[in-house]
Length: 466
Image (cartoon, rainbow, N blue to C red; front, top):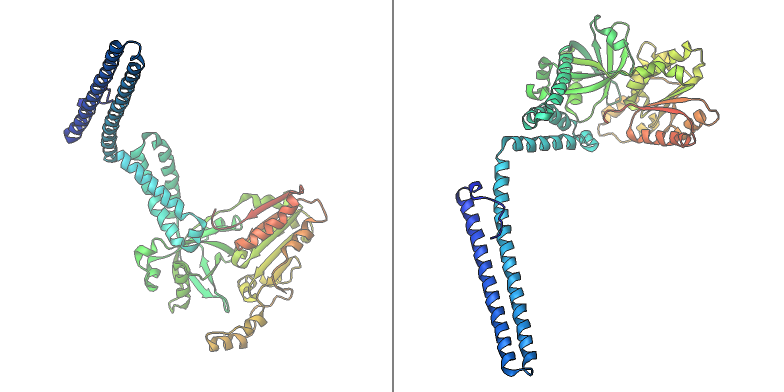
């Protein structure tokens, strides 16, 4: 009898009966096949022997041939019987494995494990850069909901993970407590003329302003207060996910911070743009932070001989505060001001209005080591057709609000800037960048030529993402 690798005690109901019938039929057919093979072979051999005896030596070849045929038939019958037995065992094993899979799929632990895998896959998929840039809200909502849910699933799925999850929950709790320390303040929101930029000025309590002055280049998370959300017809449920990061562009002496953002298709920037038109000003906002200070910035002037800071567009909200801080360090180290260079590229000069309007903004326009580049000149804009002639006429007739005598036109020649910085000496150089990804790639490639030759360059790219 073949071993079917399961006992009748493991089988229940119809499944057990089916496996028993399948095994029995396989064994019976196998036995019959072997019997037929044995009888056929014996008969053939017997006939061969009879012929040999009757005919003597003359009939011996014929008898031997028939005997060989009988043996072959018996072997073939045995192989057929073996195949039938194997088929019976395969069917029995299939039924057993199917029943086992059904039992596993009905287990809560297995279900939670599958749910955890699918949740993790969804979080990873929405973390792809293309998805985040196309729909940041999808990325944010997916992680906000699934991140805590997957921890619950894993606690019930695998005991060995529980201590790690406890540690994760402890860190999440600290983050939650930090967010409870939110700042609610009435902010002044305004558009920057002739641009798609908005400026948000938020007063900070004196007890908390030192956090913002502690380090340059920090960012905050901004959201609408429920009271303000009602003004822009934003539902309270949607408002739970209206929380975006903004870089702190300036901290003033009167305890006020400035945020600058470009209006795009996201709900937060659209809501801020709508509040800029609102008759009820100022608007109540909620602020979380600051976050993201980098302590290494405070030592760059001591460790490196030259510093290059490059910004594109609103990337200057990060670069300008860092430039101010490092410039003070360079002066404190007794190095010349030419040891630090700030390159800022933008479409039009009006995009620099927020910087010029700061307390030291006019002095910034006179600094020789600040290089401004306008990729779209004022004359180019006059040649472009406008869908609204009245708006175009207003733009052309209005006086220029920003004056920057040394501003150049066209894109900055990053290769030449890098050659001037690294080409003639063996000085240690630090390069900081914040701007469009394409601009950053070009700058990094230009610097890479010198790094491959052995030059020491410290590189930092500030970007929203990973």
